[in-house]
Amino acid sequence: MVRNVTDASNICSYAFGRMRVCVQCSRDFTPSSRHLRCPACRSRNRCACGQPKQLKSDSCLRCSRQDRQFNGYWKGGRTRHHAGYLMIRFPGHPRARTSGYVFEHILVMEQLLGRHLFPDETVHHVNGVRDDNRPRNLELWVRPQPPGIRVADAIAWAVEILERYMGIGTPPTTLRERS
Image (cartoon, rainbow, N blue to C red; front, side, top):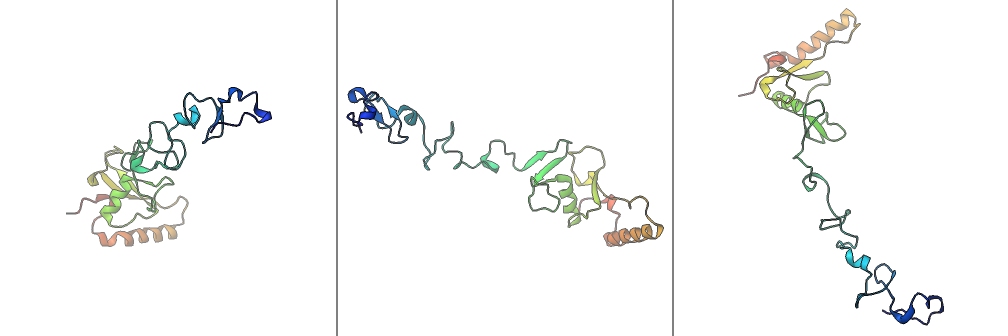
């Protein structure tokens, strides 16, 4: 693939016929032997799709998977919240955050109850250690009625809470592991 040196516009740059055009990037280069590609293209490793590979990788950025176990920072779907709570990846959960993670103590309490938590229910750690999610360390709390409520509304709210937990047998703050 020696370029024609008789071309009038390229006579100066192709002196003695030693310049070649890279078959990959179409740049002009002076070959050190019978190479058809310029040194820049020869030094780049290419992925199967034709794109340059990532440094120390078997594929390019488009072809490599960066999610879950393919990412070097993947810890099995568990992470620690900045406040000290443990979080588990559970994207379809009603209480999942935008990242798809749910607090582990919520999942443990839901497993004990056999249902999802209601919006006014929270889980409390008895000993105050935020990453101690043993069932005996967790209590189910119900938020009290809003401040400034009428007496009739407060009574209706209290009756609703009593009816919700009447069939359980034990108050929700004394839940223990099922045998």
